[in-house]
Length: 478
Ligand SMILES: Nc1ncnc2c1ncn2[C@@H]1O[C@H](COP(=O)(O)OP(=O)(O)OP(=O)(O)O)[C@@H](O)[C@H]1O
Ligand SMILES: [Mg+2]
Image 1: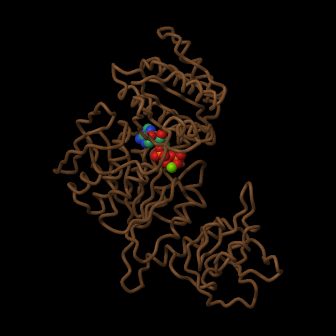
Image 2 (image 1 turned 30 degrees about the horizontal axis):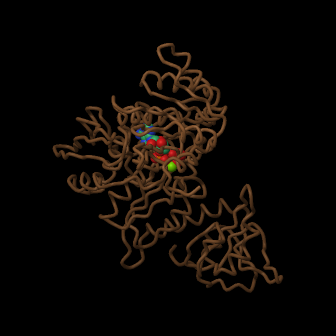
Image 3 (image 1 turned 45 degrees about the horizontal axis):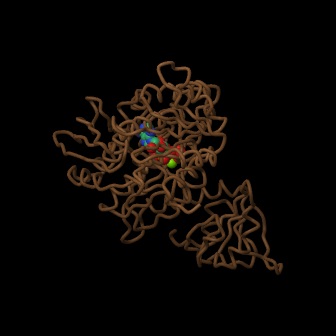
């Protein structure tokens, strides 16, 4: 974080300094942390009331560890009764957002000598935000200092924490913006109005919380309405609900996709035997060949989104193509392919799942297995689907049959409808196994898998199949 005084932090957050003896000129230079174990000298410790623990209980440890100041909802004292240096606010989460907004405004007003002009890029969509964020890091870094979220930090806490990592050297600030309810993107863009807003897809994620896909579309459109003055909307031309957001854009619109009219376009998309896509990237009269390292055709769309941002920001097409071709999946459990020594290939896509990403991953499984290898789909529950949950799981079961997946291992009672959907489809054999727990599935697979098998592991994060992903890839000790 840029250095701020305690008085500036209090002013930005509508807070008051405590104790009264605290020096208003006390300097805080970050990092801003919510975990007392992550403090460094000069940190601002943000005492958030969590579901399991209250950050206020860790404020003394944070100060002992070097934190210069605590953002807190009440006056705090250490174990010896001495007051801890605080800015006391009504609501710590809101104050964190206010602080991020104030710091961003200061970075943008650019009155610091030698400061770099900052471009804020917001990415939203039902799937692909983190993947696109990871691609943007790899496409933009060579053109300027890029700050982007740790992991999938995309909510009311993760977004301001990411903003607060930017400083006067930052050229690109990439922000993942999650929308699991109405008004969330309005709140997030209120903190950080993007100069460039990317909408990837309106899909089935978090449908339960919305009550319908049109409501999801309205929630995602908030990012377009929240653009900074003169900001550009970068929209998926292949998703009609996203393309329709052009009418709400306050300024320029750039589109991406396979559709003929898209500004940034992919054509001649091909998958190699490993499921990696190559395509021709076209922008105006220019074109370049791109071969991705990421597995799955669905990543073409994410790559196009990243390309559209970079091209709009002036990166030359050959550079964009070369950087995309060199890009890796930076975040774990996303189409992570491991060829094990015993000849089994594991596709660990267990970070999260919804109907759209399930379909995409199953297609990749079928491609990688091809005609010669046995395909095994190990699938757990997709959460937050509301009243459609049963039908959506059954539809995945149907797709397993249509793709001729050799063996399905359905994990947990919540995913049972996948097995029901598959077995109801008469054209298939009886190659579906229901495992009550993740451990039971792991034990079963250990006995069942044979050289040559290709195994996909996938569920919603909350269903926890990432533990099985770790066990099958053998990359994380159990
Ligand atoms: N364009 C896409 N179409 C379908 N599935 C996709 C697409 N992009 C990514 N996925 C898959 O969706 C899952 C989540 O990807 P990613 O983490 O990039 O999305 P996210 O939008 O950040 O999700 P979250 O809301 O959980 O943070 C992964 O399994 C990934 O392979
Ligand atoms: Mg994410």
